[in-house]
Length: 201
Image 1 (cartoon, rainbow, N blue to C red):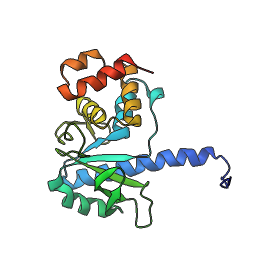
Image 2: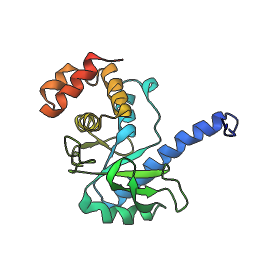
Image 3: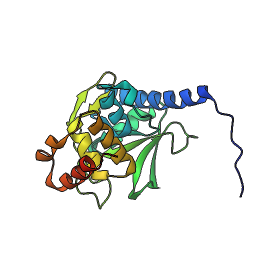
């Protein structure tokens, strides 16, 4: 069995990795804002933003930067993001049969160092139960436009991967989501939330 050579554990490196994700998020959001492109921050960073309103100690770090955009605004977004150093790519894989639009953080950046675009009003995957929400389902946060809690919960229940279930359990544990949501969720998503409420671990 071959063992890879690992760099020594570095607290500074760990901190820098978290800072790089936040810097990428803010740079992208500010560029879109300046260009007047409607958007909303989604994904793990949106979960972190909502969690922080209840308990900062419960925030999970994420390497992903997910931004909700309308397809009609994609060209404007390309122009705005290229001005601050992002490079557009249409990539296959990433679990998306039709591929995905991403913005690399520079021409030599890894796909892991990218902004991932979620197209509003469309299914991320053909087998998803619901379309993504529109960018209007958002509110102004401290430094960026944040997808609403209702839209975020629907997106997480629709995707329902391991990390989505973990994020949803965090929201449940903090009281941001509870059994009262079952009455207002789309019927298709209610069994998934019921499953998490009944199996919180």
